[in-house]
Length: 472
Image 1 (cartoon, rainbow, N blue to C red):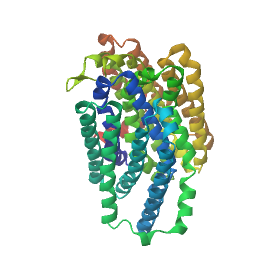
Image 2: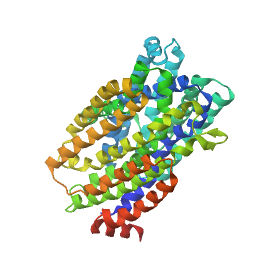
Image 3: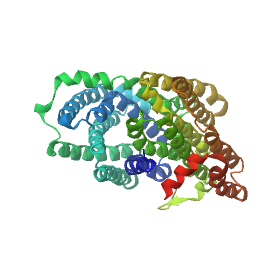
Image 4: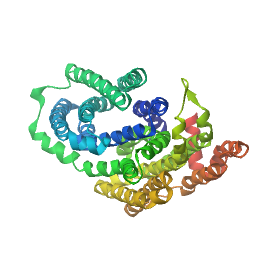
């Protein structure tokens, strides 16, 4: 096994995936300096709803495509079958949204603006289809095409949003139109590539294989639903218990904390195929333990540096816009909590190999259910006391609970001697940086000493050797 190969895969495909998510972050200065906190709260709620709806649109077919498309002999058949199935069901689901556009508009927007629901229905339909191409490019090992499509999507999204929001001053509708135009154009290009590259044909659709495909993909739906609740239930609860302005301020801070998610999602693009391939190797446990130590050490260091920069955010600007509008500065307080939440999510992802090795993937929905349930309960308990800070704490605790559940379950399947000292070390340094966050005479030396102490005193000899091998 090669840690270097894992790193290359994570960097190449992780870059494309991170870039797609990073596009919405680049819009943050524009939107928070242009929209009111209430309008940004509406947009944030809509984005969460889109993520929730896409979970049902996919119903595990994205996972099924990644699994079955690996079979080179039957690629065309599987892609043709899944593409046709996703197109038909996605059109059906979008029609359902349009039929119920009036109650959905009242629920999401607080007003009868049904055209927004039509925009949303088309955006979701388009994103579902073009994401199928992204999966095929990843499986086919075409990183340049993979990254290029993600770059094109980001550029179109940024361009159209700037035009509709900043030039046409269309507010919330402008944000949705920017997403709509970008998604439709990329979807059309994706369909042309799929159809012109001999990847799809009607004759290749195999109805007998659909049962196999659906049987594999559908069990992933509950886990995906609970995952979306983990990510977005707080916004709806904040809206219910406070108001849309609170949702907007919270969402702006949450968006800045997304760097923690980008780190782990970028890594996971290489990690999942890597551990699936090497799970049965003789020294897999030792290898996975070393990977966990090294990645968490790096993740912790990057997130700690970001945490130390939080006091400078009000002074930073992009093209004349502050990183977030002054009305949203209250959301800065939740950033460390969101970053730490995603650190615990990294632990969860790193603990997945044993679950797959012993065919216990049916327990994954349970882990995410525990996280989602605790998140919802804690939001209702903590928001009345601490406001948006309480919601951020609910997110942190729920990710901790989810990580503890998978750690306990994995340990019962196969005990692995993880270097838990190395997992805790970043959290201790993190606390120190948060406490002295306004005093750079203290935090800068702490950050500079972090990798030195980590390498000399925290990681073991085997992990030190592996790091040296990577650096050579």
